[in-house]
Structures are given as structure tokens and as C-alpha cells.
Amino acid sequence: MLDTVGSRVMALIVSTTVPLATIAGVLAWHSYLSTADNSSGRTAADVARAHYDIIRDVDRTRSALETLSDMGLSTGSAGHVFSLVQSVSLRHYCFLALLDAHGGVIASLPGVIDNGVRCRNDYFTLDNVSHWAIQQSAAEGARADVLRNVKEPLVRFALPITYNNAKDFPEAGYLVAVKPLAPQRVTTSVQDARIVAGEESNSELWLQTANSPPSPLLVEAPNPRAWPENVLRRLAQDRTHGIDTDHFNDGTIYYALSPGFDNVRLLARSERSVAETHALHVFVARVFLIALLLIIELLLVAVAAHSYLVEPLERLAQSVAEWRRHGKFEPDLPRALPLEIRHLERAFRRATTRLDRHEARLRRAARQQEVLIREIHHRVKNNLQIVASLLNLQGNRIKLPEAREEFRLVRDRVRALATLHRHMYPEGGVAALDIRAFLDELCNQIFSANDVSTIGRISLSLTADPVTISPDQAVPISLIVTEIVSNALRYAFPNGRTGTISVSLIAKEGRCILTVADDGIGMDSQKAIPTNKREGIGIQLIRGFASQLRAKLDIDGSMGTKFVFVFEPAAPRHPAEGVTSLTGMTPDEPETNA
Image (spheres, rainbow, N blue to C red):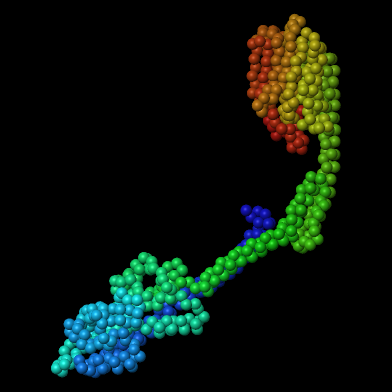
């Protein structure tokens, strides 16, 4: 993936900019969390302020009841004392009464109407206070609880006391009081705190007693939302485990729990404010802006890097490729380039100039070498022809037929090699060897040397595919054809017999098949002729040349004589790779048994 200059530049840019973008994102996220925590902190502050005001109000009422208990109330003075307390408290109490041991009213303020008491817009029965007061007889000090089934939060107080009856005898009784839970004071305190902080008021304050759902203390909305089941379960778990202080959130709604008085706990519930929602939007916008700026930066840097770094290098590479194809190095590079690329371009220009001069020298040397090699092989061919002529002259002077036959055989082989050298090194080199033309001339030459015409009583059939062979294979092929055709002309058609000698070289499935055959008397019949004294030596030569050719040899002498050689063609080698001898072997190859 990082093989190109562009990809590496982009990877470097990303590796340097991503840490900065990560730091910016972390800072934006921290800013959002700090703002979002304001909801939880604000809710906890609201419940703390409400707790302070309520506890202070409850404690004052308890102190007032304990003061009345210490005064020693009697049935005659209780009503007067209650009126005095109501006047001093600015009509703070909805109900203030002295009850006997059975819950009966001895003196009260205000009076009981139809066994009930009216408090502002609410109405509660006397039994709702007297029965609860009797349950608190074993408690020490004034006990407080919230009245249920009323519109606004009312707190009932009960304090067991001893009073003097009409006969001035002490009796056990109860001092009870019912009063609003100072909602106006709590609301004013909470709102004043928010005005100072510049926040929007959206908190709800609730009271909760054991085994009862929360009841509103301050309800700012006309229809307060219902409590989710999961929140109620958590509150129940907190009460079960004795936890009086807790704060948590359910989505965008935040809750705070605080201890109240006696068995009553305070709850605050608020929703995420406009400022906190704005903080979330600002965070998302910042993240999007950071990502957008990063993408724009990467695109701009990528375009600049491609224009001033990657594109000049590509042009330089294309110029080098054009120089390799056409021999011209002319890079069209802009002037506003880095110094390193300009140095690289000058280095390439100097290198290509030197290489052009060196290649020109090599081409001149190659042409000279080619001319020299052609001249060498031309002289070799001429020398071989001279040797063949000398052997022919020397053989004609020999009287002994067997010796003359030996000289003639050697002459034919030398002539075959001379013909091969003339065909093997034309203008096109070894790859341009016309194997069919070579075999045709070689066979005609053998026929002429044996004073036989190719269209007489013995005819020649030649088939050759255009096969590329190496000099190491061309030499044994020429000697094999010379040996077999010569033997066929001398021994296969005795007593004026007519026939055909066939020579074929066919390429099939990546292999070459050389077939030299005649329809003469066959090898089995030739063995009975006493004059055939060289047959064994000829077969040895043929087998030796087949081994040198690395060919599979198959001889069939039943109906005429047929030699089949199957071998793999080898690519022609450069003349500098090895010097081929007259027998087709390089100096490091072993000689055959021939």
C-alpha cells in the first residue's frame, strides 16, 4: 500500500494531523461533559437548597411544640395559648390541637368542623391526624410526617405530652399540629439561586415516604410527568439498602435524592437545559468542523504534493521510459520544483548521456564482432571446401577401392559441414537458418556426389517445418542426414532398383521428429551382401550423433530402412556463449563413441 510516493506522503500527513484532530476532539468532548454535568449538579443543588429550607422549617415547628409542652398546658389555657402562637407565627398553622389519650380534641385552633379541618384549599379529616398521633406515643420528641391525599404538601406533627385536666390533674395526651411545608419559601430560594447563576428553572421537587410513590412538593408544570418504572425501582433499592443520598440520570432527565425529616426523603427531577442542549450541538458541530477541516487539509496537501512532488517524479520516470524506447531524454518539468528533484533530473540527464555514448560504442563493437564472426565462418566454410577438394583429389589417386571409399566418406562429411556453415551464419544469424533450404541443398549435394539424380530412378522427398535449432543440434543433424542418405544411395537400391528416399523434420507438441527413410531392400537384406563392410561403423556413427543430439532413436528395417529421431529443440546460443567445433561439440563436452 505504501509503495508510491503519493501514498507515503498521505500517510505522513495523516500521521501528523490525526493526533492534533484527536486532541481537539478530546477537548471538545471534555467541554461537552463539563456542560452536561451541570444538569446533575444543578439538580443536586436544588434538592440541597430545598432540604435546608424544609429542615429548618420543620425544626422550628418541633421547637415550638416542645416549648408549648414545657409550658404545662391545661384544658383551660390551651385555646388561648394556641391563638397566641398562631398570631406570632402569622397564621402559619392550619391546625393546632390538644388531644386526650383516646384522640379526642380538648382544645384546637381552628375549630373542628364535621370531624374535619380545612387548610387553605385542602380538607383533611381529624382521624387522619389523631390515629397517627396515637401511633407515635412511644416516640421521643415531636414526630413529623406528610399528610396523604391532599392537594399540596402538608406536614403533621405529634408530640406526646402531659397536661392538666379541668380538675387540675395531670393526664397523658398529644400535642398535634398541621402546617404547609413552606412551599413558597422553597420555591423562592430555588428560583433566586437560579437567577444568580443565570439558569432556567425546570426542576421539580418531590417528597417520598416509605412504601408510597413520590408526591410533588413544587410542581411548576400543570401536569407533572409520570415516574418511570426503572426510576421507582432504583429509589426502592436505595431505601432498602439505607441509601439516602443518590444522583443519576435516565436519558436527558436527571434525578437527585436527599434525606428529609424522619421517614421523609426529598427528590429533585430536572431536564437538560437549553444551555446543555446547545453545548451538545456545539460539540457535534466542532467534531464535524474538525473532520471537515482535516479532510480539506488532506485534499489540499494531496493536490499540492501531487503537483509539486509526485507529478514531476512521474514525468521523470516517463522520460526515462521514453529514453529507453527512443533514445531521447527530454523531461518536461516545471521550474517550481524542489531542489532534490532538480538534482535528480540533472543526475538522470548525465547518466542517460553517458549510457547513450556507451551503447553507441557497444553497438559499434557488436557490428564489428558480427562482421568478424561472419568472416570467420566464411573462411571456415572455404577451408572446409578446400579440405573436401583435397580429399577428393587424394582419393582419386588411390587404387585400392576400400581406401578410396574411406576418403570419399570423409569428403562427404566435410562437405556437409561446409554447407552447414554457409547456411548457419547468414545476415540474420543462427535464428535465420532456413532448415528446409539447408536440407534440400545437403541432400542434392549427397546425390550429386554419388552420381545420382534426385528425379531419376531414386527420387528425393523432403518435408521440413520452420524449426529454430541451435548450432549444437544443426551439426549432428547434418551428419546424420549425410550418413543415412549416403548409405541408402549405396546399398538400398542394388541392381538398378528404383525407389524414394524421404527426409522430414516435423515439429509436434514442443518436440522435433527427424525421419530419414527409404523403400529399398532394407537392413535385413543388406546384411547378406558381402560388399557391405562399413555398415557397422555407419550405425555406430548414427547412434553417436543421436546421443549428441539427445534424441530417442528408433530404427525399423523390415520394409526398407527407417530412422526416427525424437528430440527437443534448443534455442540458439549467442556466439560468445561457446565456440562450436566442427563436430558440433563445445570444448567442455565429451566426445561420442563415433
